[in-house]
Image (cartoon, rainbow, N blue to C red):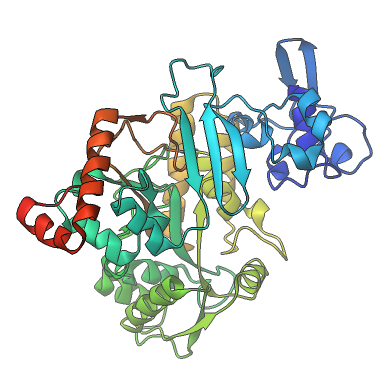
Length: 456
């Protein structure tokens, strides 16, 4: 089943998987993908309980890739009984829940998996995910007691601020850093950003605190590449970027621009109000050090196509969101020179540093975990000195649960993971009764709330 599942994933004539590229190092990958080989040469099953994977090059990070859900094992007989397309709507797996019903764009219903390996988990008998509910209605239904759990996208800014200011609700709100880094990049191949002093000036000129305030602190300031929770993150690194406009002006003078740049520079941003807000804050901050910025807003497809094309975009917002929890996933795709291509380059800043390449290549094969993380930290230090990116923020995952929902802790990898939750059923019945009572009061419920306090 494991061999079958891997070959099903990597066969483009069966499954057009966006994760296939992660397994390029498996021996025979190209021949199998191109249809020149019937089987994947580097994959075998020498005994019924052994999966053997042979790589074309050593890579310690491949252990993380093996743990990604792309290669979750599926039973061959179940897939072939219904076909690939129908299997996507009636999956078979080994997780804590089993899909019971799926109404597209309405809801997904899961029931407890009685065969789950980690008994007595899960504690919940059933989980219902409501889909396509307008944001303001989600929060109204949550406050009315119709939903047990709400996340980032259920909370408008006004609702989020109300929740934080309401002392009764505050204990049930969690805020945890998302394993994502937001930044804006300077193209190291295009003047004037081929000058390291100009790039350092950018990193010193941005007021991250004002950026966070503009988003009502739903993001946290970032000063280096690896987000909190990723091995290698150092909050106390003396080389981390900082906000220092005077130092930024000194860097501009060292670059030969004591009075600022003569020309206006185009800053590319994506669609949406948040991107425009970020762009305007950066525009104002850079003006103070003599860099005039003209904002260019583009649709997603145009934006990313231009960002990956050589000699096209000088300044732009960029970033990286975790595929798997390892520093290699943040630094290699965005900064190794191998990632530079004339088109579709994932190294958007076109940063090329042989010293960094050597560190990353050593880290890929280093067997000692502690030594390996130190190599990634050394590589991050090179980035902090050369400043191809100005690191700006880490998004915060914000969740709120009803008081009777217990055991919720944000999962470091899986968003909205509910496999460990349990319900305090007596408290839930009390909450339901109280909500029904307040509804029965009708217009008097506001007065009752004022006299009796707010039920969280």
